[in-house]
Amino acid sequence: MIHRGSQVDKDALEALCTRYQTPVYSLAMLMLKQPALAEEVTQEIFLNIWLKAGSFNPDRGQPKGWVMSVAHH
Image (cartoon, rainbow, N blue to C red; front, side):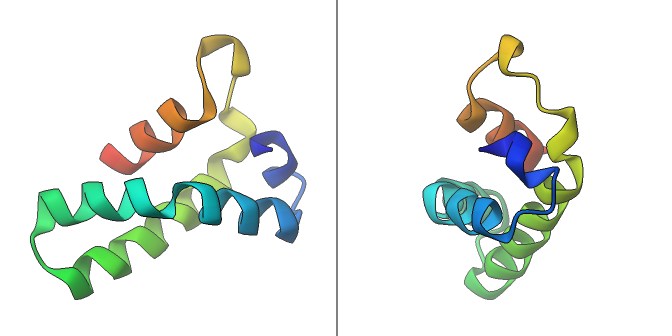
């Protein structure tokens, strides 16, 4: 699914956001403690994930770990 993101597949981005938006938002809330800012940052994180989708290597781990790593950094 992440590799599909690197091919500018809008369905892949939607699936990725649907699957991981809750844990990404939760991490943003934990770090920022402000709902509006956490929502904005979550959107930025998914944009960043979309732009970096080609760097995902399934041999190095699961998609969720990669997504959360991008979100954390």
